[in-house]
Amino acid sequence: MHSLVEHYGRFMGSATTYEEADTVIIGIPMDFTVSFRPGTRMGPQAVRNVSYGLEEFSFYCAKDLADYSYFDWGDINLPFGNVPGSLDRIEQVVAGVLKDGKFPILIGGEHLVSYPIVKQVYNKYPDLVVLHFDAHADLRADYLGEVWSHATVMRKVAELIGGHNLYQFGIRSGTREELAYARENTNLFMDDVVASLKGAMEAFHNRPVYVTLDIDVVDPAFAPGTGTPEPGGCNSKEIIEAVDLMADLNVVGFDIVEVSPVFDQSERTSLLAAKLIREAILGFTKPRNMK
View 1 (cartoon, rainbow, N blue to C red):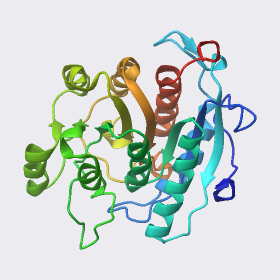
View 2: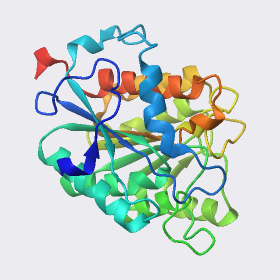
View 3: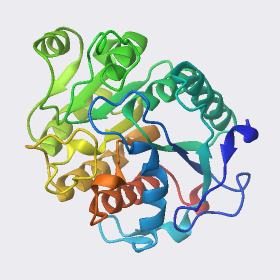
């Protein structure tokens, strides 16, 4: 498993070794099935690079990364252009992290990378609920004839875990067929992200939860660095509030995807992603003295 991961620059405050860490951060530099603008393969390293511009202390939750043990392992080595082979490698790496009892945080890359992650988390937690934050429903049966695409990833997740266990927030784009599928099979919310999340949390409060966050859930005015920007989303403050709100849940894994730095001259999209990872570590995991 270790041979599948290559070390790169580290996320701020990263521990020295894999073995000593409770949480493992892994980059997945894949953008093989994107439907509009490529570039998300460069997302993981861009997020790492800007993370050093943030404080390790969070004003939102009054916690400090210095009290937590997390390791940035690097990026998974993917066979370029080979979608099935790449998904298989992602599964292998995530399965190993879960077997070692560590909390996984993944940085994409395109959204299709979430499927093999969810598949392995579901193997460990059969009562899993997936919370999906996104501008797009990602519920297509296929995209231009391809069943494996970032436009089909949540359809695959729904088929795997059962659509009633999939909660989708911030959705504001999709086909007529996707909306009909969601109304019949998933829990889709098109309204305010924070209010919708608060209203839904009671349904899965005591169950294991996996969180997948496509950065384009945020309006492109605040997060332009993504491949398929969709106007009309939440702002940066609201998505930070949503992540902090989920600290009360039993979150067992987290990914943030679709950061494309080539369209992010100001780096504000990467900065937002790094800040959300900081809040995820502080909210979803326990400090060293509480292990």
